[in-house]
Image (cartoon, rainbow, N blue to C red):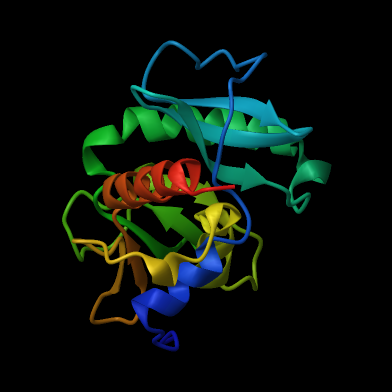
Amino acid sequence: MRMKHRQPCQILAMLFLTGAATFSVPEPSKSAGKGLFFCGQLQGKWNTFVKRPKRNIAIIEWTSNDFADSGWDNRKRCITVSDRFNQYAPLLTNVKTSNVNGYPVICVPKVKGGSCAKNEVLFTLKAGINPEEVAQKLFNMNRYGNPSKFRFTEQPFSYDSEGELNINVETFINNLEEIIEASENEPR
């Protein structure tokens, strides 16, 4: 199934709406301290955070209850995926949407542009869900302003030949930090 291509700026704008925030997390998960990524709460919602020199940045806000009936509530998903981000850290320049075993997934193939194996899945989505739309909601930076005001040297989003969305999480985090810094320096 081919995904509808969108301009990277449109994707970036959509991503700004849900999850990026800085915060000192009072109760990090068991994964805190074991890597760059950890799970914690921000304004009562579970978030995957990345540790940066100046701050912790929320990069994914977990809001879906699609898997709660099977024991995968937002807290458990946040902890598990934060741990997987640490496990796959060297591959996070190549996160993509795909399908594995008939389910839509967000994954990290070992080869750029390659298919995802079962052991490369960051997280599984509910059957019938468009993984691109979920990725756009999860990797969101809009909380800090209009992304069109910025001219980034690298775009974190692209499409492969199959029409699947690719996300360079490292670039996403760098761009997000640039937006946060700019918003902190704006006159109030």
